[in-house]
Amino acid sequence: MRRSVPLYSALGVVLLAGACSSGASDLGPAATLGTAPPTTSTTARPVDVAAIPDDPADIDETYVQAVIDALFAVDAEATRIFVETKQLDPRGVEILASIYIGEELDQQVHHWEQLLAQRPDEVLPGALRHSVRRILGVAADCVFVMAERDFAATTTRTAPPTMTYLGITPKEPSDDPGGRNSSGWVIFSDGVAIQGRAPEDPCVGR
Image 1 (spheres, rainbow, N blue to C red):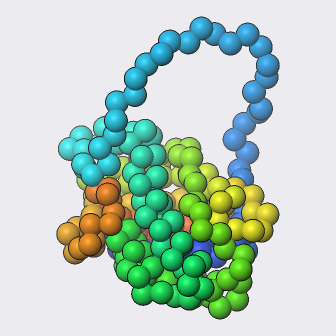
Image 2 (cartoon, rainbow, N blue to C red):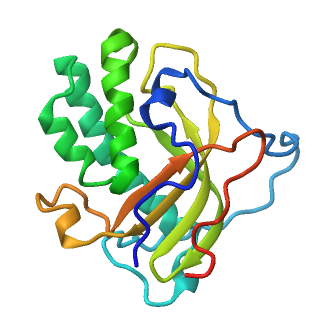
């Protein structure tokens, strides 16, 4: 049975305006200057985000990063439509429905509705950027990841990066009939830590 509801408070587009950002977590000490070790040039193998690896061990940070980038490129297209029309345009909602499922889709639409009613001029037609920090859980139909989210291209406000927890699950044909989502995945949960506590891994026991 596929997961279709978020397990914790989803921020969705509220975070686009920086209204609920908790700030970036400490990622360790800053790098110090020194003599860099010699490097070798390697050619990265392209990632096929449409394919679901048979072996969960192949779902590494490089793969997950590529999938998240693909998903939020679609999210950015919905953002562009909402910013241009300054309303909850059905075309944008249809695009959101190709990358979000279940209650998380409802949350995203609700947050956009609020944002467009209250602060439409604060949203920019850019993309949310993510840097995968850790894969927290992997199962046959579930990946749970912690990523740093950057809002710089999406809001006129000063919104510091924040740690975000994303749950993704394999896409079904009915999720994306228009073929907008180039990846093989959809997002079932998007949220942050509550009171400093990370959400439970929804992939456990799957």
